Image 1: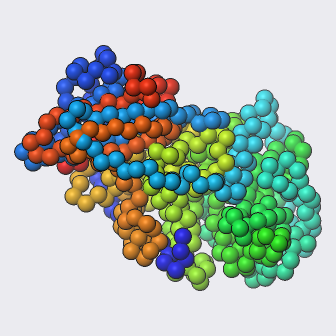
Image 2 (image 1 turned 180 degrees about the vertical axis):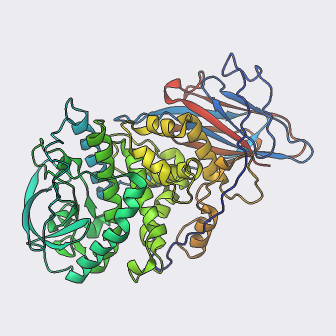
Image 3 (image 1 turned 90 degrees about the vertical axis):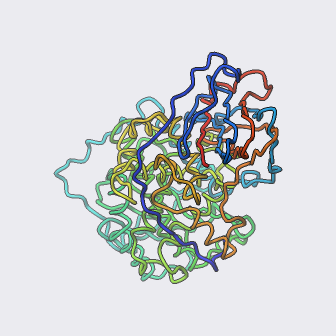
Length: 557
């Protein structure tokens, strides 16, 4: 993404319209197109159908003025598995339709995942494994009396930490570091062997930012961190060993900026640092293949701090407070990227780097870019990414978009949505079950509504019957159009459905959990009824019910 044309947020007002959904037809034979009547939807109305029960959808003819429908074939199972929930499908339009199907181009998911995202996915998987073991959360949390006053470190204190020395984080190296600044809520330690890079002013500034803004933003939105080490502060270790995790960043264009690892909050485990710690890199050329400028390092510290602190709070709330397991990766990452968005919305611009004219660019620019990559090809990417995923930016874009959409519709305070996010963290439930409990709605239905909104958001000339078909906090069409005009993105809006127009539509592919295929069904005036049938890859049975296949349908015109 070009830094010459920074991203701009254009915020849309919230729509206050009543939800409307048609009832699901009662199909006795899912593939039988004669078993039910054509759908009856007014313009703006939508329906979410169980494709294992209703595989055929009959679209009325175009009448005197013509009609347009958005059809999305989806897998909506919310289970996070090692290999991901997916199923092959075939989608066929009725006998008298022709279709324009865009040829498949190499998608963002065809690219190798970044080493940085792979590392973070590995940490979340390791946390799930550690906390799923019997008795893992039964720590001696009573060893610190509530009457004992926390004792923070002081500037000049020296301490040795165990730090991951590989991206598998199975090997560790010791880092001896000195406290350079101790604020009200954060103590920043700098590795004694780190090259000269950060000035004392740099460290003072980031500590002030954390105390004044990042800490209250995260704790308001997600809850409180633990204090196992009874020091009253969160420790940040800045070390060259973090740089060493990305030895070839000049070539790969991917660098691990920092991390949190729940191991540090499990004192019974080997190599735990027994306290609230997250890590960040330092400026300099630590390896011959990776040079980190001071400007790059200081510009990224704020988003690293607010992102990783959410992971720390989540681990405390799920594991230490409620003796559960750590949150599913997709939702955990979605909440941390939401934390970045909150930073962009709430941190005063004078705290951000001169290269950015406003904090939205510094904190949220990457999320807007990741979301573009997901929306450009949702069928090829998971919302509920597999445990084996080595991390992709489109997945992160999907994670953030879904949490953003949930906050738009299930939180009273807008655009921050902190009632929703705090409820999602203050629980021992995880993933889809967590979302359904907090929202009170079926996860498959939510996914269907969200996928319709991903195309319909601020669509010119479209008036939805329900605000669920929009984002209230962003006008994504204007956001992407503005950046398209500045040469940042290749298209004015990333999600481009196939178009079925007076002919036969045929497509095969794979439905991945939380994602699917979007098709615009355009019925010209005077056209006959059309039928769309969603089947498995063989074409003889419905898509496997194991993936909870759904058809989301809305009348656009």
